[in-house]
Structure formats: C-alpha cells, structure tokens
Length: 182
Image (cartoon, one colour):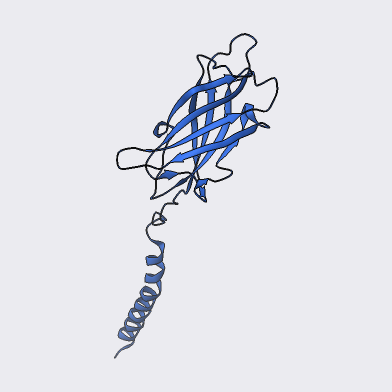
C-alpha cells in the first residue's frame, strides 16, 4: 500500500466515524421542533356579563340564568353537587354573595346537552348600577374539547335579572362574553 492509498483509507475511516457520530444528533433534531404534542387544555373559564339599559334609578340585585354546555364540558362535582368555586362573583358583583343553591347541573343525555342553572345575588343593599361582568364559571374539559364563547348558550329563567325590590328588569340579558382555556 502506498502513502496515497493510506491517507485515503484514513480519510474514509474518519468520514464514517464522523457520520456515525452525527446521525444521532441529526435524528434528535426532529425537523425544527414541530414534533411536540400540543398542550391539552383541562379547564374553561367563562366570563358572564349582564347587558342592557337600567331604568332610571334602577339597580341590579341579582340574576338567574341557565348555561347550555357543549359536549365534553362539565362543572366539577362534589358528592353529587356542583363544587364550590365553580361559580365566583366578579366584576360589578365582586364582594357580593351567592344564593343557595348557587348552581344546579343537569348532565347531558343522548338527546340533550348538559346545563348549569345559576343564581347570583349581590349583597349590596343599594344593588349594582353598572352592567358588565358579574361572574366567572370554571368548567372541566374532557377529550380535548376547545370550546369558544359561541359554543355556550345562555337563557334567563323566569325571574331573569332582578332589581333590589325583586322585580324583573326588562331588557336585560345575560351572555358568555369570553372563554379562557387553560
């Protein structure tokens, strides 16, 4: 073997060693980081708003409404009842109290979506004179559900939004203003 063939043989061996060492590194890169599985969200927090025009010198004392839940969305349950902390007063109702029962869950069936009936009350004797956010509702997500505000239906019950004299305030509505997935 001459000197030229010896250098060529050493170069080939070094080339194959370099390739063998770099293949695991290249394989680990995975093509730019897109190989991570997406994060699965486990809760949805609904922001509940009251909207409409209050009559002159009117004040909101509370609201009763039903939220229709999309598939794979349920409240946390404790001993067959909606768990504490599922419904929390916020916004203009911050500092108020929740009536008993705060909420009742009806599970979905083959023919109907699940519902969450909620009754809110503000303990301020003079009531609240501003519309807007009144509550946050935290729900559990299953099977990769990713609902938006449009996936939740809201309807008021017979009493709807009431004033401090327990009269229904006409023209007021309840809506899901926002959904935050976590």
